[in-house]
Each structure stands twice: as C-alpha cells, then as structure tokens.
Image (cartoon, rainbow, N blue to C red; front, top):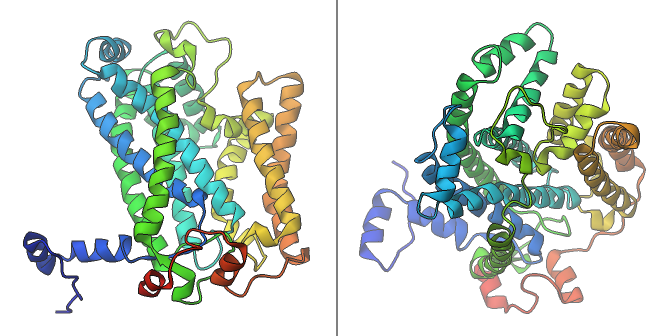
Length: 422
C-alpha cells in the first residue's frame, strides 16, 4: 500500500488519527503551507467569503426547516410563527433571507474578478466551468427558497418562472406538469420545492469542494496573470492569506449585520408579506434582485422561446469563456482596450438589472433590448476579435519583481525566510 508522507503534530490523538486517515496532513498541506501568489489583493477574499456564506445558509436553513410547514394552507403562517413565537426565529429568518443576497453579492464579485484577471484561462478551464455550474445550482436553490414563504410574489414568481419551460417544443408541457405536480402551482409544487431547496445546498457544498480541489491542483491566479516562477513569487497560505481573508470577512460580516439588524427587508419585496392568492395578480411581478439582469433578457425578446433561450444562454455562455477569449494574456491590467470593454460589460449588467425591475414597456423595454444585444455581442464577437487584434502591454518578468518594484502585494515587506518555506 502506498504510504502518505504524514506531518507530525503535537497532539497525540491527532497523530493517531492522522496515521490511519491522513486528513490532518492534507489540511495542513492545503491550508497551511499551500503556496499563494504574493501579490493577490482583497478581491481574492470573496471566494472564502462565499464559502462562509454557504455554511451560514445551510446552518440557518436547517433550523428554519425544523419549524416550517410545507403546505399551502400552513406555509405563510408557519413563517409568521417563526418570526413571532420561535425563540430567535426572527434572527434566523433574517440571517437566512439576507444571507441569500449577500451570498450572491460575494459570488458576483468573485465571478467578475475572475473575468477581469482572466482566471478562466488555461490551465483553469475545469475550475471555471465548475464555478459556472455552482452559479446555476445557486440560482435554482435561491428560486425555490423564494417560493417557500408562500406570499404573493412567491406564488406568482413560481407561476411565471415554471411556465417558461412550456416554451420548449414537445418536452415543455410535461416538464411544467412534473414541476407543478398537477395543472397549476399548488401544494405538490410547494412540497417539491421545499424538498429540493433542502437538498440542493448539500449538492452545492459538494460542488464547492470539487471547485476548491480543482483550484489546489492548478493553483491560484493573481492580478498580473502570470504563473509563479519559484518560491520567491509565493507566500504560505497561513498566516499571510488567512489574516488578509479574515479581515475581509470581518468587514463583510459587519455590512451583512447592518442589513440583518437595521434594514432586514430592504432587499425583499413588500408583496411577499401578503398571503398567496391565485385570484389576485400583483401589478408588477419581479424576481429577487440577483435574477433581474437575466429577467430583463427574458422579457427583451418578444418570442417566448427566444427569451427563454437568451436567458439560459447568457449563463451557459460563461462556461465557454476559456475558448471565446483568444488572447494569450490573462489579466486586463495588460489589455488596455479590453479593459474598457470589461467595464462597459459591468455597467451593462447593472443597467439590465435596473431594467428588469421596471415594467416591460416603453423606453425600459428598448434599454433591455440594447443591453441584451451588447451582452451577447461582447462575448460572441468582441471577445474573440480583441484576442487577435489587441496589442497587450509588456508583462513583468516575475511576480516578485513587479511587487518589489511597486511596493505592493500581500507580502511586499515579508522576509525571504517564510517565502522560502513555501
């Protein structure tokens, strides 16, 4: 049998376990001595923040599920009971509800950071594709969770979104019937969504573990987009990155706490405090804010099937980024033309989000169509062309040379000794 080179720990119990199951050796290698590029900035902390948010969501969701009733006649009142009668139920619910928004904020920043610094390029294609799959599972989990309070926006949002599948020829109607468990959104739908909303976070956790494993195989990218050439370009993960990530997590949690304790309903919709009524349609049906750019794309195209394909295609397109971007340079720091277009894309996403919250009429519909057209133009035409036509700036010889000249980075003032250990 192959022997694993085990780390010796001071605790004899840990040593005894590790000699039979080297989990502590693995953790010590992956999260203590793991070499990180010495110039990573605070944007790299949002991966850790997203992981912590996932744990918070699973923990609070587990306790909420103990008090929730997945029946159409009981669901709304069970949520109100959690808020009013269960000890600290209000806190659990607000942490969970606002946690979804904070989770998406962390993931969106994490994704845009990856796009800006070219973290999807070789050898990190599988890492990026796993991230896109995580994003899709997140969206499905969040949508089903939004249905559970069984308020007006929950019910009508579920009706609108599930109806989208009917646009697919032949298989569409059977899929909708399967989702509904009948001929309309009703009790079987709520039961299915509750079961899936409870299950999918654990699927998400498994995907995050795979995502992390893929990261540790190919190593972390960095703001320069060049690979470390030796120990002088890296620092150990602990304490340098753990301290930096820890500080970012504390700041993020303070902002999170402000929403939980001072404006817990700011990112929600007031109509969801009205019990679901199939006979009364809300004046304006909107999903949660993190779905709004994709919702704007859905409504921008007059044809139902075209809108559905555009919405799902806009997400699937991200998985092909490693092949759509033909440039050999990773980081936007050295791509002066593409850098401008990247920020146009970011502004486009914000405009699409705002247009998605507005009624699909008049100028807002026109804005959504222009925004959708630019989104696909950016990825399908602009990105491949710029990869061939753009003249990038000269790359530095190494990470350490750039850091020491600029005086920046995670450990510009770090001594050589801990870097040599990396």
